[in-house]
Figure 1: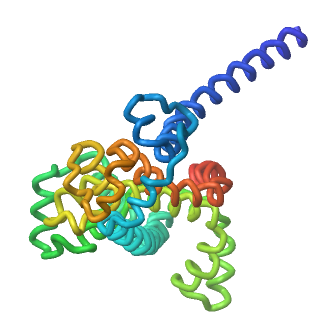
Figure 2: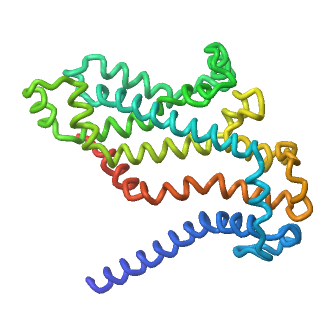
Figure 3: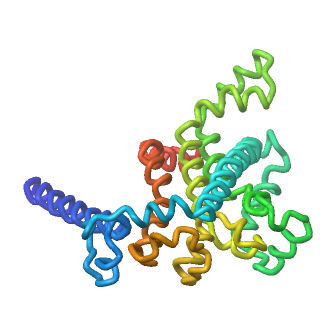
Length: 294
């Protein structure tokens, strides 16, 4: 009986590994293909000869992108949005999750405010009311239109408050006995002990702001204010090649729209690819610990 159980476990583990490898390949292969396409010649890309390795290595597409002012303007807008948006979102999430992590005996209105936030997950007002609200605030066509509407992510708040509730209550009680207030306890005790969860939320928020494109498309009145993902959407999905200016005409005979698109997509994804490995070790740990309740 023990031998059959071990053999079944081995078969399950082997199938599980194979399945996860297939999923990993499905995620990695498109990125490798885009990388190979960006470093290939225009003729090889047009002929469909590029798969997972560059054909007729060429840097002309990257030379073109490096002289494309609008691409770098969109990158700067996205960097500004990601830095400001992540900082504001994390601060608001911490300040919201801390009081909601208390028991109803400590914070009498906790249940009301908790359902107030959960209600926004269950019911959505719609695109038109959301657009009108942003328009009435007077922040249209500014960086704040990309940051403030999504400043408080309810999923992040729920994850963080569950993590706070899992911390020993005696730490807070001892801090109160030493004369500390709620804000001191939050920033001196709770936040340092919540680094795995905070790293997870930071990663999720950074990815959200970096990849968001729809809000930039409808809240920005001019293409010059588009963030990176919106800019890439206009030239890749909509095939609006007017967004690619012709200030580097000397490259037009040695590049194609496919190689230029691939190079910009790869450069746009490169920062997230570079940052993710440093935060990945916190990712699973933060999600697991944040899901524990008492």
